[in-house]
Amino acid sequence: MCTRSSWTAGSTLPSSFGEIILRANQDGSTLRLRDVARIELGALNYEFTGKLNSELQAPIIVNLRAGANAIATPTRSWSAWRS
Image (spheres, rainbow, N blue to C red):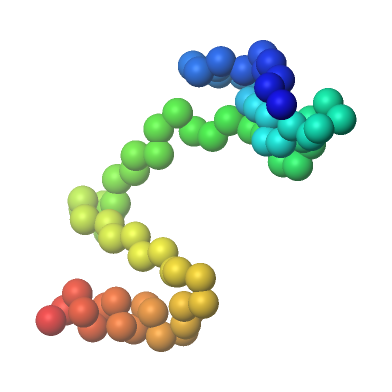
C-alpha cells in the first residue's frame, strides 16, 4: 500500500518529522513517527573543546556497546591508550 506523507527532505520543524510513516497497514491506517517517539531538534553543532586547567586537551570519547562491562571498560581503555 502506498500512502502520501507531508514530510520532505530538508524539513527543519520537529512536527514535520512526526509525519514520517513507519508502517502503512492494509486497512489504510498508518503508524507515524509521532505515534511512537518524542520528536525534538538537537543542537545545530555538537562540536566541543576539551580543556584541563584552562589548557587545551584532546578529548577522547568512549561509548559502551550493548552488553559491555561498564566497570572494566574505562580501565581497559586507559591501559590501551597508555601503551
